[in-house]
Amino acid sequence: MLPVLESLLVLQDRDVKLRRTLKELELLPSEEKAIADKLKFQMSEFEALKLRTNQIESERKDLDNQVLSKKAAIAKYKGAQLETRKNEEFQAFGTEIERAEKTIVELEDKELVLMEAYDNAQKAVAAESIRVKEFEKAAHARQQDLAQKKINLQAAKLQLEKESSELAAQIDSVEVNRYRRLLQSKGDIAIVPVENGSSCGGCHMKLTQQTILNAKSAQKVTPCENCGRLLYWIV
Ligand SMILES: [Zn+2]
Image (cartoon, rainbow, N blue to C red; front, side, top):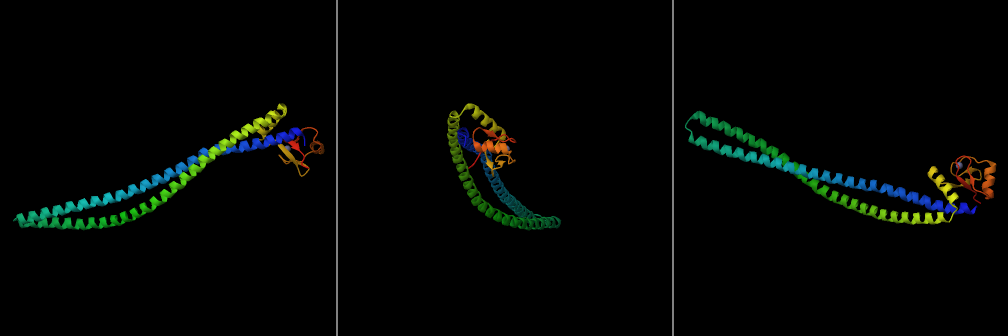
């Protein structure tokens, strides 16, 4: 293989790794955000559940107060019944008492329904509390993993950048520039092997006999006539 291609291949190896590292670094913020969003959503759902549970209890307490005031009204009507001498008034108070007693029964029925609902809601809160805590724990562990991953990737990035520039400094700058332009424009790799002895390892198009011979003889840098990537021959 041409010595310059050999050096460029080593450089390409670092550059490809560097590009992969940069891509992974780019993805980190969205991964971090996804975890934070999920956690926030779980927390707000849990808060909403607790709020609904408290609302059930406060509705029940409200009914309880209504029962108490109906009971107080009954006591008042009973007192008034004792004081009145008019039969009509006595009966009117009696009707009010009956009406209030009926309302109390209705209110207490509703209270029973709410008590059961509250009981179920409390059980749901307890179960959710455990689940949310575990979710939070897992999310924090994942966040820590990502933070560590970021440190590792940044260290790898620095190392690869250093290696890449050191390697590039040892190669003819014209060749390095040509290689870098190719790498940039192709988006993947710039130096490829001749595939199956007949086609380009980059674009997979069939190469001409002359190009194959040039690559094989390794006397000069041979680009693929189709994509321009630089070819080398694998023995
Ligand atoms: Zn090609």
